[in-house]
Image 1 (cartoon, rainbow, N blue to C red):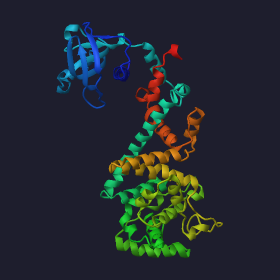
Image 2 (image 1 turned 120 degrees about the horizontal axis):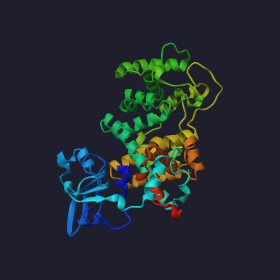
Image 3 (image 1 turned 135 degrees about the horizontal axis):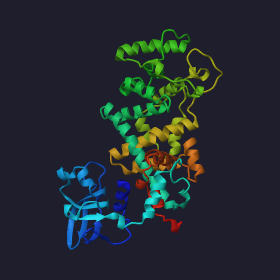
Image 4 (image 1 turned 90 degrees about the vertical axis):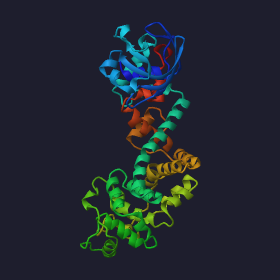
Length: 425
């Protein structure tokens, strides 16, 4: 027996007959209390009628009643307000109980535990992958909505870190968020390091000079040197040398950038050039994004970004290639919106108590096409709707935070399937 399973039974009142203590007193659960995932009693502020008396206090849950002493609760003042000890098996003498004890194993259907064991012992990619079609659509939708919000809240931690780094300047934080996203998965860290070494306030002084912005970005990326032969990188290097002294800048190490196993259009040099061009599109980065009222406007804003003319026939410095305009592709724009722009709008909206902005971000997720990757293909094969970024982001979050950790008891979908008994299937 797992203690978290007993929490689940108590929290959702999944007992199948009237509860009684080991002293045969009737127990009415008016409120099971607030589930506590930190130190202290498992449920706080419970409301119970035990016998003829009304009680308000904490509920502690164990597999065995002797666990109370084994865990040392009798010496912990945090447990003084426990009004009911809920256990699977009572292995103490009645006279040793300090308060009413409820032996829960007599009051729930053991098929629930059998279903739970099948999930936690499953070797499948997702424990309930073969039963997802049994869950009503509205149950799935409500849970995916919750999963998307949770995923955005996780991303809020990174954004709050950037906000603190930029002295609570939201434009600066958005600049850092975008920079990290421009690195996508392979070069996210060096992009973030480059942005940390180059404050947005420095960039802002040169937005009317795209060449200077590109010089600052490539220079701080550690990719400019006096050995470069082409006129354009030489010009960038000369400009950067002056600006580096002016602003006392220290570039990051060039070896941090990854080129291996990337398509040339995804080389960090191309992404840095595109990022430089985005910085010079006019107006503040965040204010421009806030002005976009539809996903089409956002998409057009980012799709219109192209690297400077030198990169039309280069993927790296000093190596000529056939001509091709290096604009942000459709998939790249979609990933930027999904991974940085929309999460930032949601977090910003929450911080200023602007529900309409939060709702706009969620609506934009529903209007953007879902990502295409191996994980999403497996969800699609299982019958899940992966047509929108709303669903794909929610499914990615659910997989990492719930399915991989076997948190079926905390999952709305898992909850629904666990409560289906063998006879109801």
